[in-house]
Image 1 (tube, rainbow, N blue to C red):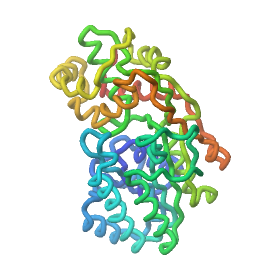
Image 2: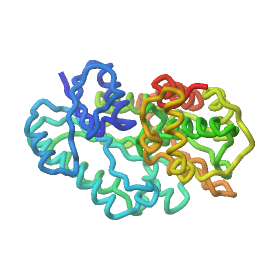
Image 3: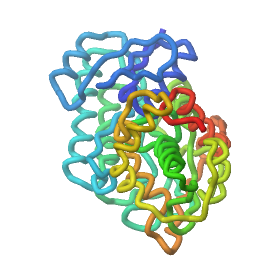
Length: 359
């Protein structure tokens, strides 16, 4: 039986990928520093710091059964956005991958690796993206770790004789809280804090910005598809739910799912707002019998991501960031999700798990 190593298993994509492989009957080794509490089914957890080269060597040499890898780990600096072009962050992410893969291919018969990137690959941070962004378009050279990791793996795949698939999801939505880029915990906490203060659930962003998103379950299933379908080998694929949306159009349904009432727009620096509400959140935890987590443990670095996604501070709509998913659909992976229902589903999941209140 094939055995997959899911790296970064406590994160959004790692959790989803592990769940997809487990459901398909694979043996799953989940590697992460924190125990991945949201993986369902039978798996083996390995606590692993990818910045520790010795630890990676010891782990890789202790196994000989690993055949597939889904690499979802990422190192982000505090504040999130500025770190995307920071030399330290770029170098760290490159080295983390090398620390693991070098000994892994020496001691195991690795057949396939799935690498996660994102739509930052299309250079939206330094210039407007082409519409739509397609996988076949030329690289936009700008500071990021994607190219270092990709070039390393493509070169390594030749000598170590494994195949590679790269996935580029856009705005992933899922159950994990305390991670670097997941909006439902931020939205849910913001709604709860506004409700507790007797305030309406006002949209905190700026000018309209049409978005695409992708449900974490879809990304997990795409990782499984890539591992089991030769058509994907050597290829790069964009991933979305298959539609676009505006936050203001989605806001009433999100409010309904959370049991709060919407109000007129109220531009708010979500990152600053969250950082000033720790004491209030502690009171909410007690009042509603929530899991004993701090607000920082709820939002991770995702409150900075919320400011970006909501267009906070913008008076003119930012350049569109549409990606085409024609390529992966024509290759045979046709799964889709309703983005509005996806957000509402994961907000309900957070309520069910007592991470955010139910009103």
